Length: 351
Image (cartoon, rainbow, N blue to C red; front, side, top):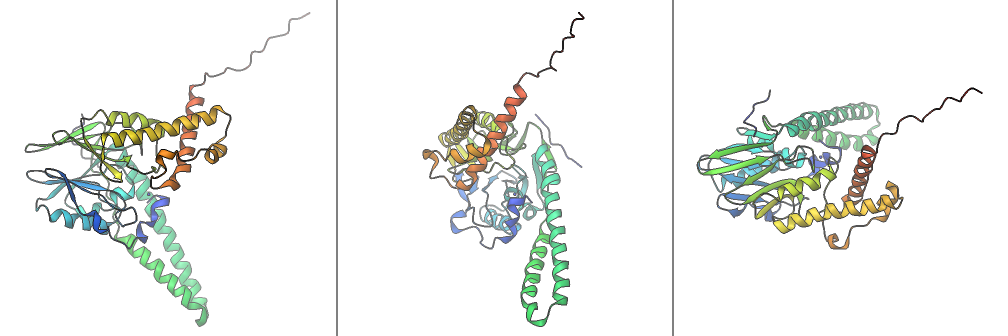
């Protein structure tokens, strides 16, 4: 077990975080699922995007994930204040994706916790991507200013509107603070407050390399973050799909009855087993396609969403699920193939 250790999707497809204008809908109020344990299940079309949760201890509160924008984080904090006046002392980020971390700055006084890998990815991927996006937007703004200065009065209107839009975007970006975990875990970490106990676990790679699970042994509740998409096709941009299957099997060893997903409603053990079954079925379908001689393009075209998952949300992610699984299975086959030595050369005997 790792002790408390102080350390000294901006993903390309998720930059639209700054385009959201809709707050979380009325159905995203905090819902009590056990004594002093609450969840906030949100719409993916709101400014919150990803689910979050809160555990109220005797002396403080712990937050699990913080939504997609600072505004959504503040809305979440306001709801927490409606159920407790205790300070939010801990914020756990399940992984580095913005829809679970970009509300962090609403919880300035908290101790931020995550896996060592999540800290690495927040700094090396998310922060770096935001800096690139800011630099690109600044360059575009400067070009718009030059173009506007050279325009005729009749042509300036559209450029002025573009200037305002780009400036608003930069102003929003400037208010975003990327806050990584400052306390990290490599395998597990236990937080105790009075009679309450929370266990944080890294059980293996899955949705990302650094997914952290929060387990409440007494309440038999597990917060899985995006290791669990309930009634939804997963985003696999940063996934390790073959490892994900193994990691989900590990989560099912937890003595939990309720499982909180990163997206979708709170689920049961059966719901997690169903999602595991989805990943296993994709693996089987892709293996069959490869055995039949299909390349990735053919497999992506031929494999359709199985009927039992046809009602799932986010079906636009399905082709990338097939492609990711195809790449991983092919890579595994190559890695497991025996290395062939150079062709044997026999010296011709002298006659």
